[in-house]
Length: 295
Image (cartoon, rainbow, N blue to C red):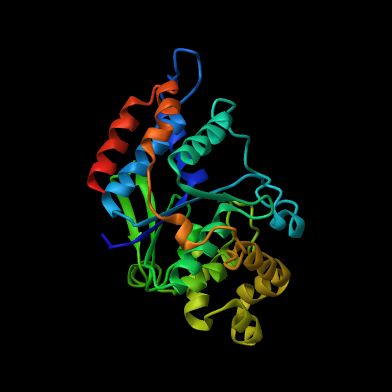
């Protein structure tokens, strides 16, 4: 487990994961007034659990607010295969953000960018100021953000099972560098985001090509060295490969109104307690009390 002073959280990823982890039984948590809370309960449980494990001095939460981001302008079919979120979950995004606002936690969203882009931009801001950071997410796209100062923690089961990716761990698993994750998706595509890639090329072949050529730019410059049907596939889907790399690349230079100083770790429990009680999140209150005592 790495030491980290800055925890950067993919709020949308964690909330969706928390909802489905507790909704599979069909028995959703509700308040006495009928407000669904299983997603926000699980999300806050995971967040406080991560803070107990990592003990950050800074905390930042990024949110998705629209699928109509700049990537849709480039490729209208981007994420077009995803279904709609359950109606019971949708109001919990606003509830989670209201609770975080009451707690004084730094959070940010942007209609033209995804949470990944906000995460990447804040990670680079923190890194430039000499902070180490851990990105907490269920999305492996963030692996491209790994550096010597930035670790990515992928959620597996709850919050107690996390996979920590450093440059060494990533290289051991895939034999490529973090910035080659974009090239990997450019070749193999990504079904979950509807990124097309190169038809007929899977992860194994894509990794082999990247080990030989490094980037898709270098690969296509030296396409004469690739033989047979593989070369034909690459020639046929050249434009798709470069489009896919653009779609897969996380933006890391979004101007944000928040800075590192605004992300100082704090949980203003007294300020948020009434809302938490209205949502009947008694266990979360106990976890937050424990965290403030530790701090």
